[in-house]
Length: 331
Image (cartoon, rainbow, N blue to C red; front, side, top):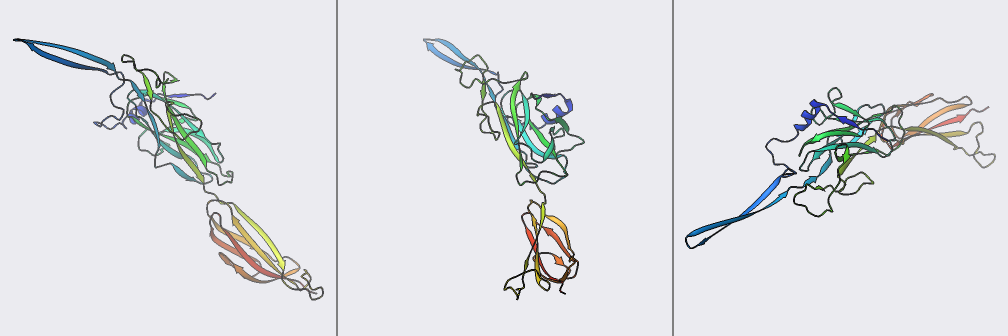
């Protein structure tokens, strides 16, 4: 079972609470538990005597549970490279209800392919970017943030490292930040289907959608998704040849002394990012004599033995070919 950490850092709470805009209208509306008295007054005359009567209808404002999780534009679709550390996906979380609740925060991955050391961080200085010397690492989670008042916006980060030799795949690592309304270390129970009770504070869930799979609408939680896209170069080299001279003795092509062989070097980058400073060397083996370079689809090549082929950059999904001839040494 996952353990939960309760965030009790006073400085962090004060900084995050400052996200409420002073003097602005509260999105959550009237506070839950507010008693509303609505009084009607009737007056009339009988002769010279004036009479009045009144009646008051009273109800208690129910609690709207509405957690909203959205992507922070500073870290939604993030390109990462092998060896990267502290790479953040950023999310804004708001209590858009009309009461004070706790946040239960968890990072849900799709099965990490190349990121490691995944932790949840809190933006303690409220600037929306990860500052590893200032912000707070809350650990792998889930964690609980207590006493979040109406309209308060928190920024959380999912932070991960990328290994020096990550799994080479074009599939991104996807993460959902899911935040549930909590109280007293437990999920809040919904009263959405209950009959109206004028004197009881009922909890009404307003959340819909959410990106995390396996969860329903109106469950008191919301989620948003962000991805790590690995930028990497995965190079392969293939060498092939064919005999291009016709054997006059057998009406065919054979690798006999005097025959010319045409080699093709094929370099493929099956990764997602560019490889730079490519250098390919090919020395003519004993028993053959270097002929000439026929073509190079990219880069520059020295037309001497040994061949030195240089390519400044080869983009992800791209390839390059070098074609050259050698002759089998004759008698």
